[in-house]
Structures are given as C-alpha cells and as structure tokens.
Length: 585
Ligand code: TSB
Ligand code: ZN
Image 1 (cartoon, helix red, strand yellow):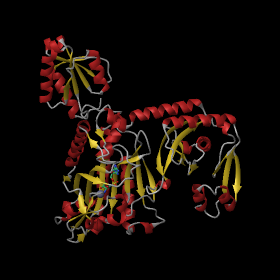
Image 2: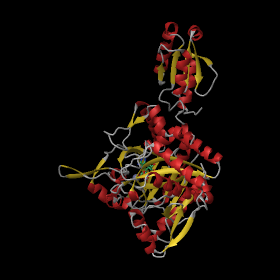
Image 3: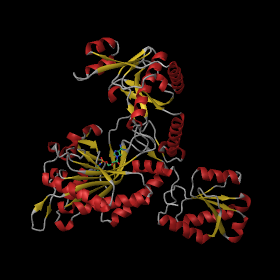
Image 4: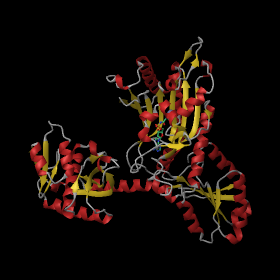
C-alpha cells in the first residue's frame, strides 16, 4: 500500500483535502471546532469538536457530498501570514486554535489558509485551488481524546484519503476492502477463534475453543524447540509485590504501563507487566559456576499492561497477554553466540510459519548522548559490535535505529505490518547489563572470581496473542493442517446408506489423534461441501457407495478442485506425516 506521507504531491493534496473536509463539516455543523488535521501514511484525518453531535456513517456521506460541491466551486486557496496578535484575534473564539498558537515558538511563522468562506490556521503548503481535489473518499471515523489524553474531552476523528487519479483511488479502496476481510478481528469472529466481552473488560480477549487449539499448537511448537535448545521452563505467579518491581526498577520507570497496586493483608501487589524479576529470582535460587552458563529460563507467562482503551485491538494489542518469554543468563563473552541462536530460532520459526514480510530493527545507543544509557562504555561497544557481526554473519537484512536502545542495553526487534493499522513488533531480543546488577546476580568464573552475568530477554512469538493475530492475517484464516482447529470434515453422501461407514472413519481418525468432525446434517451434499469450504477446513471427506464398498476415503483439499481416493491407512499416514512435519500445503 502506498505511503501517502512519503509522497510529496499526494501529501500536499491530502493536507488540502483535510481542509476541504473541515470546510464541508463547518457548512453542515456550524458549531464545529477543529483541532489538528495531519497527513498520515494512509491519507489524512481531522480531529473535530462537534459539540453534542455524534457522527454516523450517513453523516460521512453527507460531508463527502458537500466536499464534492465545494471542489466543483473551485475556490482558490490563499495563504496569509499573521503576527501572533493577529492570529490570536482572528481565532479568539476557538479555544483549540488559541491553544495551538500559544504553544508555538516565538520564531514560528504563523500562517493561515483561506478557501471561500473557510479559514484555517496552517503551516501549509497547499494545492492552488480546491478544484484539484477530485478523487477522495472519507474512510471511517472514531473517537479521539484531545491531545491523546483520556482525561480530556473526546473529539471525533474523521479519516479520509485523496488521490490524483480515479484509478488510484479505486485501487486503494479495493485494497482497504481486502485488508478488512483479512483483519484478524473479522476472521476471529467468523471462525470463532476469540471473543471479547465488556463484562471482562477492554483488551481482555477470551480464547474460544478453536483459537485455543491453535494457541496450543504454537505452545507445543516453541516448547519443543526451546527444550531442544536447552531451555528450562518454569511456572511463576502473575503477580509480584511492589518491592519486587522496585528492585527491578519497573516501579519507577514502567509504572504508567502497569495496573494499579492492590493491597492484600499487609502486602502490596501488582499484576506483573513483565516476567524478568521472577526469572531473576529463579536464577538466584542457586549458586552458579561459569560451567552452568548459559542458563535459559523460559515461561509462557501471563502479563498485564495498561494500554489506552483506544489502543487495544483484537488479539494484537491487549491488556492481558501471554509472552513466549525467556531470560538467558550468559557471560559477557557468550553474548554473540547466544544472540546468534536466538536470531536463528526467529528465522527458523518465521520460515516454518511462512512469514516473509518482516523487518529486523537493531536499536543502538546514541554515541553522542551516552548520558541516557547505562554507564559501561566497553560493554556497550563490544555488545553492539557483536550484534552487528552476528546479523552480518547470518546474512540478515536489518536497519539500525540509533538512539532507540533501552537504557539497559541494545536490542533487536522484528517488525511486521498488520492488515489494518501501523507496524507492530513481534519477536524481540534485548540485551540487559543492568537487571542482573539490581538483583545482585552472580556466577563464579574460571578463576574462582565472582562475576555478574548479562541477561538476554527474548520472546520469539512476542506474545501468543499478537503472533496469533498476525498469523490469522497472514493465512487469511486458512491454517495449515497442523494448526487448523478442525483438520478433517467428513460428509456422508447419504445418511441412510453411508452414515455407518462415516462413523467408522470418524472413530478411526479420532483414535489416530486427528481433529475431525462429521457433518451428518440432513442437508444437500453440495450445501455441506460449500459449508466445509467456507469454514476453511483443510480436508473434506466425501464418503459414498464406492468408498464404503472399497473401504477407501475420497477427499478434497481446501482450495483444490480435484477429488482424490486413497486406502484408509494411506490417507492416515499421509495426514499424520503432514501434521508431524508441520507442512504448509
Ligand atoms: C522479552 N521483558 C521482555 C521479555 O523478556 C519484554 O517484556 N519485552 S517487551 O516489552 O518487548 O514485550 C515482549 C513482546 O510482547 C513484544 O515484542 C510484543 O511482541 C509483545 N507485546 C507487547 N505489548 C503487547 C500488547 N499490549 N499486546 C500484545 N502483545 C504485546
Ligand atoms: Zn524480560
């Protein structure tokens, strides 16, 4: 999808279109006051105070119609520069614009743009006349707190987009339509993967049986890999005392992302936002020698984070999440080797899931602003060089984000683009020089001296929640057999003659560990076959006279037209092989 913000011409047109929309809104709702209307990757939006009016979809159509009319009128867009006093006078009845003017630096050139009866405070630039704005569409609207602060008034945000040809606009609308179909929230509902309920709360999804089956497969997948790599898995509680998080530093530096404290008897608890402190204590439970390291503590760990209610999104951004977490305790000289294993595991996993569209971002320290970071120059330099070396060795493409490292160390994130909305991080691997010190962790080195280990925080799936959201969108809900909640759907051609045989096959598959359903509804064969396809079930078995008489199985694979017939054991072997190897067909 084109990034409008990065295209100079389209960026200007979209900015002008935001003004055109504001003018139309003002015509229809004279009480309207406007906050800001920036250009974004997907077009533009404007935040508007409409008083008591709450917009509906029909309103968007009305606004769009008015915009068309104004565009035909073709007024010129005229720039004027203003002194601060002139600006304050001109917008004296508009508290939003006054706020903007009052927050401008003294040396800012204040300008406004006028088209016909509408003037807006704006830096520009704009197109010359509104006539140039022909191919636009208002896409959606939502609530948005003034200045993004939930304590402020809720404004209404209208999103739109503008192109310079009709064809580009139509293509874009089609892409949005496709993205909506791919949205994990839609597929999640259609396929009964997860639900939310206001009684449970925003950002607290409930995994339904189908979704839970997929998640279980993900857990098994990564658990197997991690066990092979020498990880030790633990279970720890999803609360900790405030003191635990004071020790880790989260209480001072991460509190705005945490649920508030709760008191139980004399103890003060928080729902944990991260698992690192618990794992530090697991490490500390025993004395360690250099021979034990690396020690890899893994957990599928539930965390709670405060995310703004407007930011939560399906399974992608939640307030209750389960991380595929591990903390790797290493000697400084093991950083490179261990990091390499983590990156290789990420690469293997993405390959197994067929994920191709992702970016590695290496976040490093800003060498000109060392104050901001944990003070150990030598450690930073060595570690950053090592991370680069490993990525280069593995031939991984990545980009560097200078100054984006955490206070406690550099990190590698994997960024992906969801069907709808901005990029998110899936996998992460973060070096940490500090936390082991805060918990006073140690190991005895080969000379018998006490040393502090370095910690690598890593999550391959990130969270099961976010990874599943992404997987749903990547596969468009067509899961490979090993992940599919229902792997086989059996349809007897005619219940009267074939149900008994269908039941026999059903039991056989069940005994062999296959997730199977039998559709014996009194519906036409064609209807049940279409239903099976709608549900995106990988294998649909059609059992009639021929199959019953020959003790065979005839099946269709999702997305393919041909019907194949195999002997029972051949079919089971094929299926089990496919599932075991986690083949993607
Ligand atoms: C990797 N302490 C580390 C851990 O050891 C940690 O918590 N890192 S994190 O903050 O980056 O979170 C790990 C992963 O969780 C992220 O990479 C991201 O994929 C996922 N994640 C973060 N916030 C959310 C959220 N609100 N909803 C769903 N997934 C999230
Ligand atoms: Zn951690």
